[in-house]
Length: 200
Image (tube, rainbow, N blue to C red):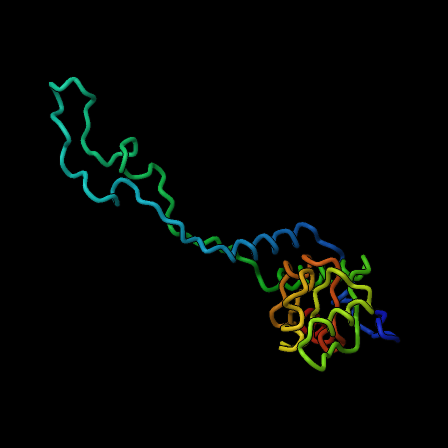
């Protein structure tokens, strides 16, 4: 299939990589798993066995007129342990490589169908200046955009830091969440070829 280059001309890409049907359920599952994997899962509270003290019976079982109590560290006591105390846990969800690649194929194919994928020959800056990047993006009429480069470019990264709706990412570290977060995705030609290799 042919894709239009924003500069001028067109580029041939594999139908297998960029012509897949949109699988909403799969994309949702992969995005959910990715976001869940980012959770720390370090929340911890103490149950009654973990709280210090409470070894002695506070008063006699009988004869005081008060309710029987075996410890001062029960959940209904101030300073007692929590009933269902949170424990550190992992939120990781298993996603097969095949599923992950299929989700990326689905996302890229949908970006093309919705005319949200902008392809340029290259995007290079002479200096890490925000003004230079803003001017280039204005030429392509882009406001909320993810710039997808073949490799990490420090000049691009520094230039984009002060632009609120602009993200910079390289092919190696792209993920489904960042791809759907922005209104448009601007991808350079070398990056497109790398993505095609990865998804074919």
